[in-house]
Amino acid sequence: MTTPTVRSPGAAQLAARHELGRLEGEFGPKRLGKLLFVLYLNMIVTFAAFFLIPGLLCYWWMRRFPNFSRKQAAKRLYLFEHGMIVQPRFGDGMTAFRWDSVKIYQDITQLIVNGVPTPAKYVYSVVAPHSGGAEITEFYESPESWGPWMQEAVLRAQGQAVLEAVLEGGKTDFGALLVSRTGVSSTGNGRLPWSEVQGIEVGGGSVRILKSGTAGPWCTVPVSGVANLHVFLAVAGRLHRP
Image 1 (cartoon, rainbow, N blue to C red):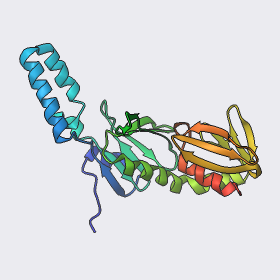
Image 2: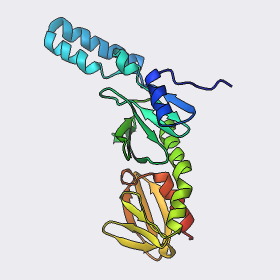
Image 3: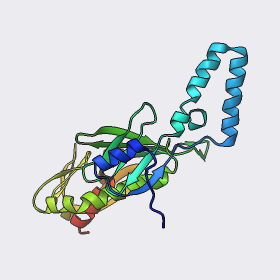
Image 4: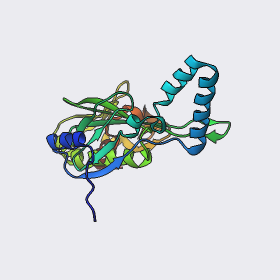
């Protein structure tokens, strides 16, 4: 089996500097389908033929897509054994993050228009100490693959350490939720002891914490407000005994 390699010298150097380890996955920008590509190309030609300035503006706008820009087409999202490197959709440069220190917030939305679902929108906001932040979207192909991949990588890197810290009496901030050995807390709802937690549900873009003996959820927070969702669910699952 061939071991994948980083073809970008800059990315390879950055990965070595941050000790990211073995390359495990690489994702390029999602290209427009043939129909949309032809439609946009015709728009550019039509505008340019009759309206010079609008034509130029249209072409400038199209360059955000990899079909119309070699620079955009060359961008990559690299997933490594110990972290990742991402190039922003807009702008230059690249940023490295390690799984053991990163916080990831995911926001996946899909609208229903006249009963027909529109394409899902994926936004993963990534932050880490001394690394700044980045926003990773469906600009990169296969978000349904690299999104869970990142969350599981963070779980492997941080899950056990977070659980041990909580069991030793510490508290872990997951953004909208705070977890301790004795219970879970949220802004505006106070703290709910684990003994009173009936269950934790994730669906419809929300995390719902159910309280024993009550009909409705004790707390509902958007998934986008929970840092490292998979770590939270794993740790809460160990502390919660239904």
